[in-house]
Length: 161
Image (cartoon, one colour):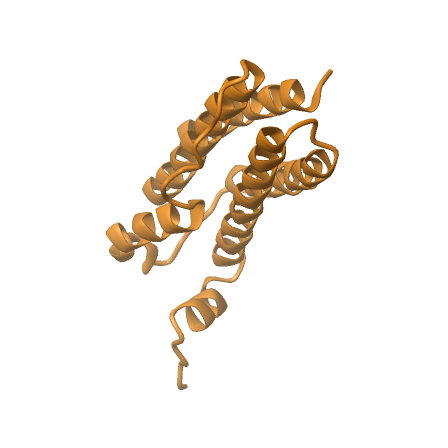
């Protein structure tokens, strides 16, 4: 299987996984996060399919980090409340981090071995986005596992007791 075909399979699987995660989580911000990343993966799928057909691709106009920042800013009141996560939520984030890390590593390797400049550019773009997805999930996991510490570091708040 070529690297582009493998990318198509990986992105298709990621879209399905993140949509499933969005349905299962009770957190409205969590739903938006998973759906935003599913949309990124859907766009990656379209880009990889276009490259497979010999067409060019356009990187997204926004980065995953910018999209997530918008989601958090629009839902700051919800985010600032105590976050109660289920075991399923944390498990989904851990699986997502593993998927994104492995995806970024695969795309970096594929970029180094790319058959054309278009494929190289595609894989570099995908690696960058998957790296940002990893950081988003890692940050969210940190919020769920230790929210008071997360708020201190993310919001630059020091609690005095």
